[in-house]
Amino acid sequence: MAATADSARDPGPASLPRLVVELRDLVVAYVRQETVEPLRNLGRYILFGIAGALLLGVGMVLLGVGVLRVLQVETGTTFQGDWSWAPYAIVVVALVAGAAITWAARGARKRD
Figure: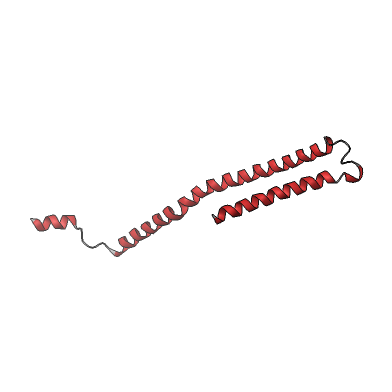
């Protein structure tokens, strides 16, 4: 009677085609778990990153136009005539300085 109980628990060696199918299923499940699912999660972060970069870019353009307008209108006759180019140069220098500070801060964060 003990022999029949053991044989019911152990069905015997599995056939080679069944083992191959199980191995394929295991590999496919592993690849999905380790590559496909993390890439789906990464897509959300990429989407938010691109949206944030676009919004910051639009904001900086609007800020630059606003500063240019203030320099042209609120400074009276300071930037008129031969100095009409100066507000544009001031805005460009300010925006480039802001970009350089941002780039340096990004690099400092990576080193830490």
